[in-house]
Image 1 (cartoon, rainbow, N blue to C red):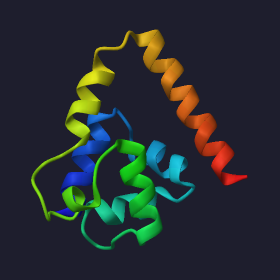
Image 2 (image 1 turned 120 degrees about the vertical axis):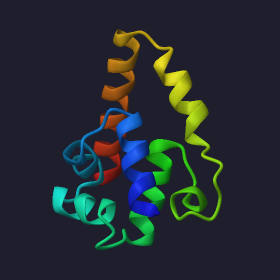
Image 3 (image 1 turned 90 degrees about the vertical axis):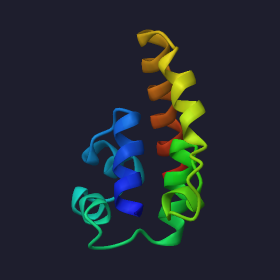
Image 4 (image 1 turned 90 degrees about the horizontal axis):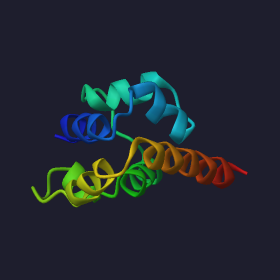
Amino acid sequence: MLGERLAEIRKNYHDTQKSLADKLGLTVWAVSAWEQGRNSPPSDVLLAICKLYGTSADYLLGLTDIDPSDEACKQRQRLTEEEQNEMHRYEEYLLWKRKK
C-alpha cells in the first residue's frame, strides 16, 4: 500500500524517484525499494515525506483513504509555471537549510 501511494503522490507532484531521493538526501535505490514494497522508510523519513507532500502517514500506510495532499496538489496546479518554479526553488532552499 505504502509503495503504491507514495509513487502516486510523487508523480502528482511531478517528482521522479531521483528528485525525491535528492530532496530527502537518500539514494534512488531506497525510494525504488519503498515503491516496490521491498523496504519501508524509517519513521523520520516517512515524516519528511508527509511534510514534503502535505499528506498523512495514515494515508501512505493505508490506514485511511482520505489523502490530504489532493487539495494541495490541486492548488499547486492552479499556479502559473513561473510560480511553480519559484515554489520549487523555495522548497529546495528549505530542504538545503534543514540539512545544515
